[in-house]
Length: 78
Ligand code: FES
Image (tube, rainbow, N blue to C red; front, side):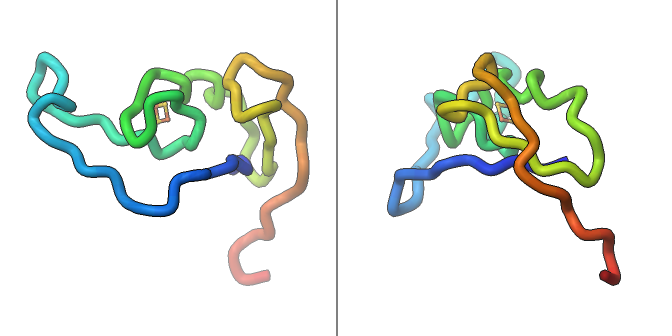
């Protein structure tokens, strides 16, 4: 699985101690759907049933928005 997301920022984010959770860890979003990038906000739960090899697009990059298939990933070696 994979997904297309729109990124509008043009530079890095600086994280500090205020970004740490109660457990002292910083969770960085890797799914691209968080509203609090670069921090994870739990939006990745929407991706749990994505199928391997399929590329998805969520309307407005909203995990609750309509999800459609926009392509396929080539298998390794192809
Ligand atoms: S990994 Fe993206 S919201 Fe959690």
